[in-house]
Amino acid sequence: MIAYVKNWVKSSDSGFGKFCRGSFYAIKHIEMPVVPVLYKILFALHRSSKTIWHNTLQFIYFTPMFKSQVSGSKKRLTLQCGMPQVIGALAISLGDDVRMSGIATFCGRYHSGSIAKLIIGNNVDVGWQNAFSVGTKIELQDDVRLAGKVFLAGFPGHPLNCAERAKGEPDLPEQAGDIIIKQGAWIGTGATVLAGVTVGKGAIVAANAVVTKDVADFTLVAGNPAKVIKRVD
Image (cartoon, rainbow, N blue to C red; front, side):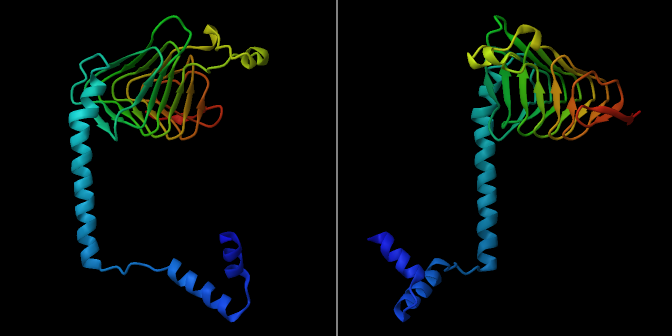
């Protein structure tokens, strides 16, 4: 019955049908009038109260809870928007003055029989939606900068053989490897660094690059696969 009435209101060419249709759209698109002074005040109150609440929750709940799960000196840790998701067998060590988005995922390799290691040095930025798949070890040395959506892929999660994948078998040990990001390196937005790769000191990886082999110190690489563009001494 309701469906019939709705269809009739939408399609009827009668005067009453047109009246109902016009009334419906008029009611549907009613808007609250904006009183600029009032809503500027309300917006300021909303933003300040939201900031106070989030900062308080971060201070008394998320930051100490995350610090309880990691080793290292971890002084002056700054977490934003909650805390990272940590899954799998993974040991995390933090240096000082680390700034980290809470919207990040750190995953240790399953079925390895050992605990993978994530080592983060001093003065490191871990950006929004970073994902670290730690096969054996991922090391971020001092002064490293990771932009948003960086993927450090230390293991693939699946074997190369399709029959083994169909059975749900895990990846093989030789598919996993260390990833080392040396001091002062900068990884751009959306970049992927694969297992076994070392990104050199002061190097820059451009946005959306896929790094499949080592990057020399003080070089800029870009593309898929990433290639040297120039030196950045």
